[in-house]
Length: 284
Image (cartoon, rainbow, N blue to C red):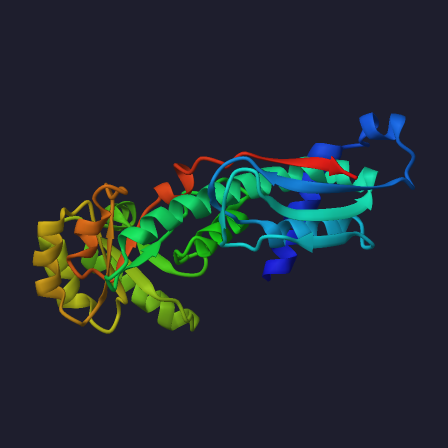
């Protein structure tokens, strides 16, 4: 399923959830043909995300709407500014209002936090990754917000990359068994999927290096401190991509990036982000 297919399925379900059998408040007092104008008002400073989403939502609901962007995704925004203006039937404006606000507030909060993390990585070669710690059925927009904030998407789901985490290894029986089984599975099914494996300590790193060359693409150093990562990188060299994960926050991410690790994954980009305050107001 491509981006647009996922997008419109999500929007259809969102309208079904919110509108149900009708927006009775609007139906009761406003005729269907009446048109109106509204503007998206910024009420908190941050990074804007979701303007493109908002435009698609309004156009999906009212193909004849007029949408004028004042700000673009990724721009710095200040309280009191206007992000966009839209003209459509009042019924469309009011039915889209909460969906648009919910998407944009959430996305802008994620983009703002992601930008703060990315700013800590300036001058390093380390890339910032998100994770699968997302809101069910809203992952499409949350990961898009990470991109807008300057981060990089990790795998989208369980289907587009193989990641052998601690539970996989423990249930399988050992690192060796997990690697061999997954490598055989890839070959047997002719899959073009990268394989990442989690290491919990330096002993795990040594095992992975010993049997994983030409099979494993990336080693995740889980809950390693910066000093331990430096030691692990000496062992790994250039044979594998490296990713640091676990316990990494805004206040310490710079020390992790200073190790030279290729990637740092931070679930907090999404699950700890606070939505920015915005409102959609009628205009003349």
